[in-house]
Amino acid sequence: MAAPVRQASTAPPAKAGYVKRLVRSGAPLNLLYAPALLLFAVFIFYPFLKGIQISFTNWNGYNQDFKWIGFGNYSRLLADPDIKTVVKNTFIYGIGSTILQNVVGLLYALLLNTSIRTRGVVRTVVYLPVIISALIMGYIWYFFFQYDGGAINDILLLFQDQPANLLGNPKANVWVITFVNTFQYLGIAMVLFLAGLQSIPKEYDEAATIDGAGPVSRFFRVTWPLLAPSFTVSMVLNLIGGLKLFDVIAAMTNSGPGYASASLSTMMYLLYFGREDAGYAATIGVLMFVIISVISIAALVMLRRREVSA
Image (cartoon, rainbow, N blue to C red):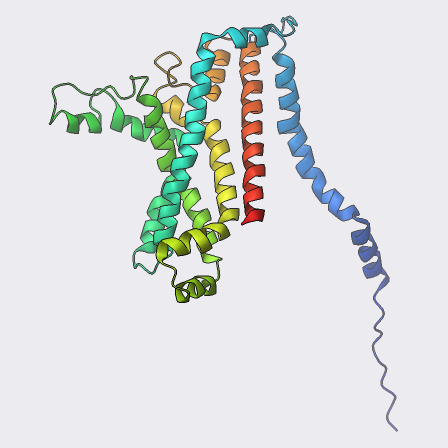
C-alpha cells in the first residue's frame, strides 16, 4: 500500500510575514531615504543656510575675524551700478538660451522622428557636445572667436581690413556666449522632444490625416498638445541651466570687459576670489537663488497648467 503524499504547506513563513508588515508600515522605505536626505542636508541645505548667514557679515573669505553688519550688503546690492547689467545678462543667458535650445531642439527632433537613414549619426553629432565639459567647450569656442588669430576673424579678414572684436564688444559677447551655451545643450532638448514624439500613438496622426488635416494643422492640433510634458521638462531644465551659467563665461571672456558679460554666478566668483569680498558674494548668491527659484517655479506652474488644458 502506497504511503500517503504530504501536501506542501501554503502558509507563508513567519519571516515573510514580518517583512510584509515592515513594508506596510513604511519603515524600510524611510530608511532608504535617510542617505539621500543626509547628503542633501550636508552638501546643500547647510551650505545654503551658511551662505545666508555670511551675507550679513563683512567676511573676506579667509580671515576668521569678521563683523555682523546686518543688511549692509543688501543695501550695497541695491546701489551697485553693475548689478543691473549683470542681472540683464543673466536673463539673456537663461531665457535666450532656453528659447533657442527648445526651438532648434524641436526641429531636430521632428527631423529625427522621420525615417531618414542618417538619423543615428545626426542624433549622435547633436548630442555629443552635451558630454563635453562646459569649461572645455568654452575654450574651444574661444579659439574660434578670439581677436588675434581666431578662426572666424581669419575668414573675416578675407573680406575686410580689421578683425571683429566679438568677445571684447559688450553688445556682442553676451550673444556669442548665449550661442555657445545653446550649441552645447540643445541635444538635451532634442532627446526630450524625440522621446515625447515617439510616445505619441500614430493612430492620432493617421486619424487627423483621414479627416483632411495637413502637416501644419496636425502638428499644432495633435502633436504639440501631446508634447506638453516634454516641453515642460525641457523648458525648466534649460531655464535653470542658463540662469546659473558660469563655465562658458569664465572660459571665453572671464566676465569682461569689466562686468559687461558677467552673470550672477561669475560675479559672485570674482567677488569672492578676486576681491576677497565673501560677504557681498554671498549676497549675490542669495539674489541668484531667489531669481532662479521664482522664475523656475513660476514656469513650472504655468507649463503644468498647459499640460492639463492640453
